Image 1 (spheres, rainbow, N blue to C red):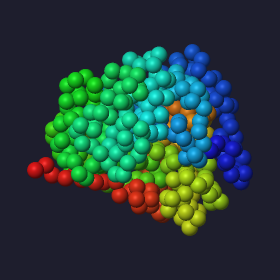
Image 2: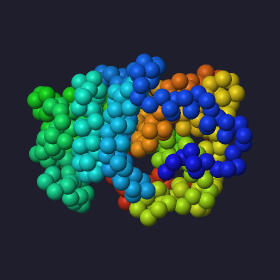
Image 3: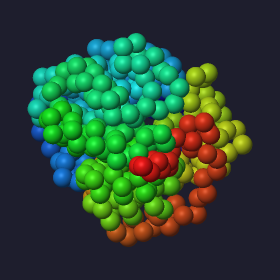
Length: 383
């Protein structure tokens, strides 16, 4: 979905000029030149636990199949990843489940020329046949399966180690002690350097961290879904764990590409999320109005900004150990997203933004119930 083409025609002239500003147009036409690379040294660095990464990562999820079920060009995806590296991104996130396997292959091919200069992550945990790629019911974090999955990851990613591997979802049938035990063996073998958890229950995080330090937790987090603020973010701060928001742009919602008339194609999971239902969508668009208004305000103060950049800048302003990983299959969106590191809030601006945000109630669930059931799960006790 090209969010620039889908912006509502009723946007004000100020917003229209903002989204097509000369500064942004120049960024979109610079490509992968040396000027791009040096100019984006300001992308900055952050720490996830002890792991040093770029302040913004790239989610490599939809590069084998988009939300709209289209199949992107593989060569274009390789070029996009390499352009991200040219722009200063050194943190790339994927998973065995994406494809399955195909996004790992795309990432492995793309980063081969500069593998030693980047941090790559992948995830295990879904019950996927390692020979056929067939998705089987439920989850599988049995230690022997984890080791088999990592062996396949290394081949697909064309590397001898994975910098950060996550358990994609907590397996309610396998004690976390067994999971971390298997990961520690992989760490001792040099095949994995760090590990994390995605969408875990808080007690499982504490149990895992007590065995071996957890480097990062990856949960959905954005202006559209702020659930982690209640328990997970304070827990990360307490334990010194980094936090990686997936879907930091609200699956495209916060870019302004979706309006009250938007309906989703068959197979697009957003069509199954009640926050995007015809009943809830008009109310939730108050969030989009908020980021559009602040983008115009930043533009007026001489800082080129788009709604997407405002949404990412807000995340970056929350904590220095938060590293968003917006995903995209479009070069223009990649360049726009990396530009978010140049957009900053003053303390007073952040106070006002959060005050405006607190007035907005998001209606509807973030995921279908059958998917949401895999989040915030606690691993069983070890007997």
